[in-house]
Amino acid sequence: MEASKGTSILVIGYGNPARRDDGIGEYVVKRLLSEKEYIDVLSLQELGPEICEDISGCELVFFVDASMDQSEDFIVKEIIPRYKTPIFSHHISPEMLLTLTEELYGVRPKAYLVSIRGYDFDFGFELTEEARKNSEEAIEKIKEICTNWLLQKI
Amino acid sequence: MTQKITIQPVTRIEGHAKITIYVNDDGKVDRAYFHVDQFRGFEKFSEGRMYYEMPVITPRICGICPVSHHLAAAKACDAIISADIPRPAKLLRELMHMGQVIQSHSMHFFELAGPDLIFGWDADPKIRNVVGIIEANPELALKAVRLRKFGQEIIAKLGGRRIHPSYAVPGGVNNTLSIKDRDEILKEIDTMISYIQEGISIAKDWIEKNKETVKEFGVFSSGYMGLVTEEGGLELYDGKVKLIDKDGNLLELFDGASYLNYIGEHVEDWSYLKFPFYKKLGWPDGVYRVGPLARLNVAEKIDTPLAQEEFKNFKSINGGKPVEGSLYYHYARLIEDLFAAERAKEILLDPDILSDDILIRTDKILPEGVGVIEAPRGTLFHHYWVDDKGAIVKANLIVATGHNNWAMNKGVEEVAKRYIDGKNLTEGMLNRVEGLIRCYDPCLSCSTHAVGKMPMVIDIVSSSTGEVIGSVKRD
Image (cartoon, rainbow over all chains, first blue to last red; front, side, top):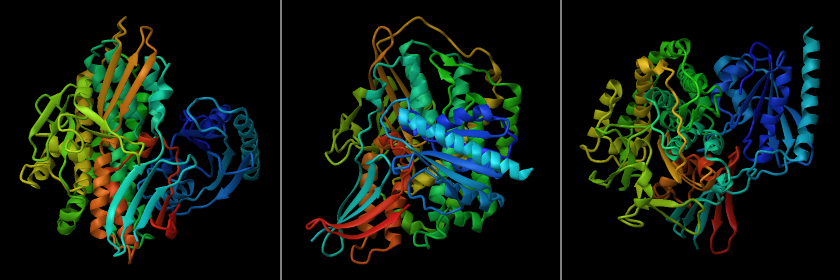
């Protein structure tokens, strides 16, 4: 899923919407479609290297993912490029994507990982109520960071 | 005392795949397993859904090869409504499939296999990676990313979404290709072909310089299976299923819809992933491989000129007999990549590609339908049984990683026995085992329905005491 282009903020939601709360990333992206005048969005099942080019054109990037390894409803933390060895997996981490973007395009955008707590990762297309609530709170935080960032640019 | 070495991916959904290597007191490998410890429940999840939902639902199985599932599902649905889809629709679906093959094969070679080939098995892991490739050859790395993106753009121009397209529908496709989009793809395609040829040069150069390794690394006999054209050529979208034995003799040439007559599935209690085999030879004599190496082994030619030239070279490797070395998967993968790019160009130059004759409707609902396609990693079967309203009552999916389950186990054991010294374990030894798996490019999302992350844990465990002797984690 791709929204409008041309802004400097990109929100990448990733995960599998057929695995209930793993669809948090797509949920957040869909909700942010209404903000597309100043936020680009991208929804993916897994991160791939081809999006380095999209990232390289942005100044602020959010990676939104579901997590079952945290007690907090959501966590927003700034991330920097970091290499992670792929073994035989096709999965690429956000930090690795930032590394590739920096190496390939010489650009290092400000980036945040937004981890949102999920509860049920079984087959199904509906988020749990708790995951939906956590996602809404995370969306407000993403908007707040974006607003502050844009104000600083003025 | 026997030691057990375990190489285990860990995800936020527990389970899925790992490698276990048992080492005896002398440090020699007794046996090794590649096993999947997560049950794949997608077939059950499909029950009760309407058949026409399957092309939309099944791509969710996998974020790596969603187009393959999308098209296999659509083909199964065609069979359910008894639709012989219009030629333009077939071409458009095949074009999308070529986009999938280009992005998948290109990504694999440059990012997963490339670091081993360019820097060597024993190179420092700090440089033996895709970042190392970027630093050593940034132009090559950019080309790899552009190839991947090019494949994705073909998919996006047809399906509208890069990862989970909604394009193929029962009876055809739901959108035509515009002249503008056709020309934009065509404009890039010769450049992409040259990039792939560059990758082939790297692979051939590596093979030439590492002849001894290639001869001994994961080399073993098996049958081979893949789709072929009516004239016996390489086929990725349609055609008949061809099965040959280890010497290249024809075992079967059959319509994919009758696969249950030929393919059985063996079960082991240490893995949730089944082991398909050729029924007439039984288990384990009927084991076979799928994917790029297998497809080139079963094919008699390739119908595009540049790929055909490489194919002749491939066939000369073993005097026309099947090529057995697992490392040749990398070479075969790039030859297919070249074919996919050339075939995409052919399709785009076909006048029918712009036709609006893209959909046929019927009022039939047959009780079952099978869709078969060559996914990047091998033959993919989707089989649905439906009630008279079209609701799925049963589904059976055989994915490429399943077909290659035996081969990956065999290969892991061969490589572990040859290279692992349990008393002087090195990173390079374990990298060779991982490298064997990379030859087959398994899709663990397809075979286990894992979600996302896959860091690895390598545990060395005493099987007699259960004590963890050593552990290495990569995340």
